[in-house]
Amino acid sequence: MIYSECVSSCPRTCQNPSLTASSCQLQTTDCTSGCVCSNDTVYDSLQDECVPLDQCQCHYNNDQYQPGDKVLMDCNEW
Image (cartoon, rainbow, N blue to C red; front, top):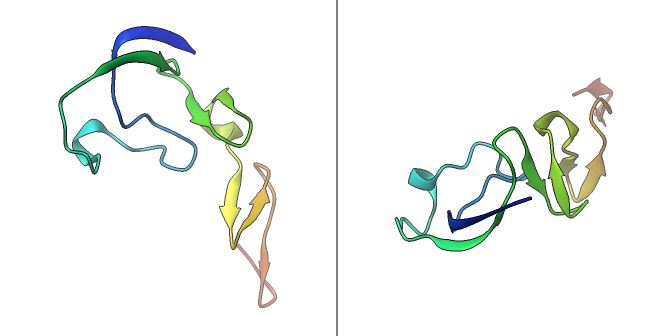
């Protein structure tokens, strides 16, 4: 993580990888000091670290899946 004197209150995460300040529910331009992931990574709360987006785990029906895992639903692969 990188320290900055002005970080968004809506950081990109594995759960919200495309989140931008304009789509943040807080709709604020205020910033605060703190740590953020570098531009090429997002925060993964499950691993408690910054990871490349392609290493984020998938969440479906309260289960976690690793990148590349397949989910079987009604005999169909998703």
